[in-house]
Image (cartoon, rainbow, N blue to C red):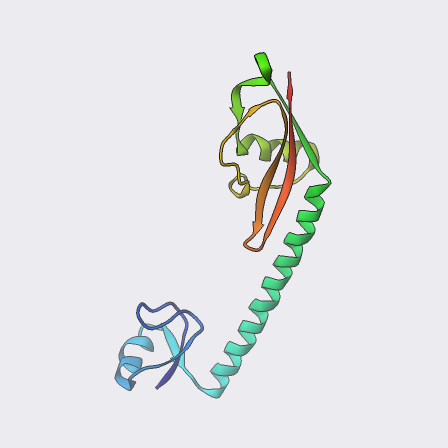
Amino acid sequence: MKVILLEDVKSLGKKGELVEVNDGYARNFILAKKLGVEATARNMNDLKLKKAHEDKLAAQRLEEAKAFAEELKKVQVTLKIKAGEGGKLFGSISSKEIAQAAKEQQGLDIDKKKLVLPNPIKAVGATVVPIKLHPQVTGELKVVVQEA
């Protein structure tokens, strides 16, 4: 029997896949636990429409991420903090502080978890911080640290 999976089923397939299983397994497990539906013409058409809708949404999110990445190139965030000799900071600047400053200064709502900052910023000067906006799009934000 052919079945369209509604959920991921271990050792069988992922959500949305069309799989061939034994009749008993399909009736007693897959259909009974609502993990899948029988692959009728109507259900196949519904699956096709659902996938087309998901692809359209994914393309829209990708375009939005690209547009936001272009907008980020024009933006600069300035942070002021106490510094000692040689421009070395007392403390450091983390991704949380950068995200907060971007919201206050530019009105940008950036999630601190999307900032790719391997180590906190510990010196005065300009730094380009990559931001993971989408699995295929990475934007860059210029962060300027000044001595207070």
